[in-house]
Length: 89
Image 1: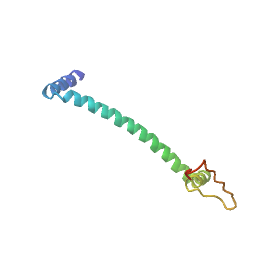
Image 2: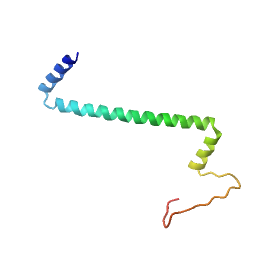
Image 3: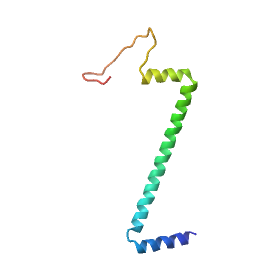
Image 4: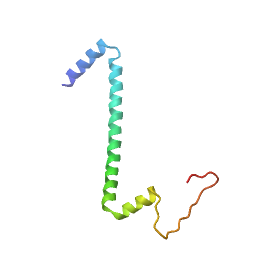
């Protein structure tokens, strides 16, 4: 099986001088895309866990509201600390 594929690849390279270089570039593209897919699958799993926590866990929902929306409870005192001139909020 591998001998047939190798013969086919050698024949294609003989017909097209760019064939072998193109094959190597495509293999690198496949490797890069597979790595991107693994990274995105990991990120999707993390986001799915976070979404589930937001649906099920009131503490997770409160944490998200405090961190992302900067919400506070009535009666809480908020202290804002800036590093120096022109510090970002």
